Length: 239
Image (tube, rainbow, N blue to C red; front, side, top):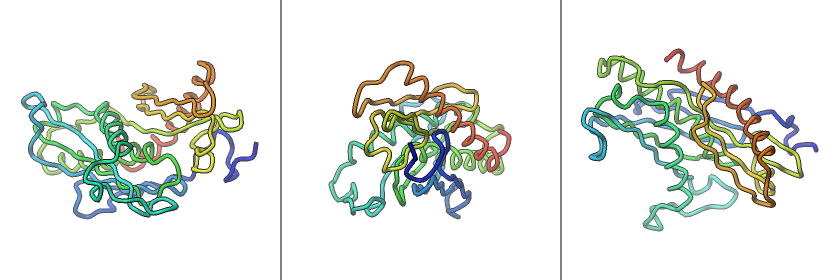
């Protein structure tokens, strides 16, 4: 089948990561995955949550879509006096994904909060947030080292994420909105640069799917994530 935007089945949308987009944040970037644009900022606080063991740090995330990030205006969470369930689920995913590559003892008793604000959504906002959020986190950790606040880089590796799905019985990488909205199967994959899986979120939207199809989707995601890691490395460098 011909894809909506003319890509090959195993091809990512054009990806651009612009670092240092916020001069006040300890780390920041703007990530553009096709028409999905997410602003990611990392803020450092010199205290850790109470549940964290003494001497260790913590990494957490918050996620939000701006009111006109989609085709129709959505209400801000604050106007509803509670966080939308979708936003809560996505920000927990982002936090888990980033913590998977952080040495909390090396980070020390401080918290890094990654804010992921979707400026424009066209599918894959959670995966773009993980990929861009890692860059913002890494830049904040680099800042901590430059300030002499930590002795070594507390990151153990890279982490990135991408989606894949089955549309009209074809396995496709990095679904845009038009593909995602009528996908038979949708899968989000988070993976480290060592090829380790951090999280899989797979759903049979239109039909059940087989283990073989799941493996095929994961292989597609692994290819895309390797490309995303190279883009991250161009900005962050060696850890």
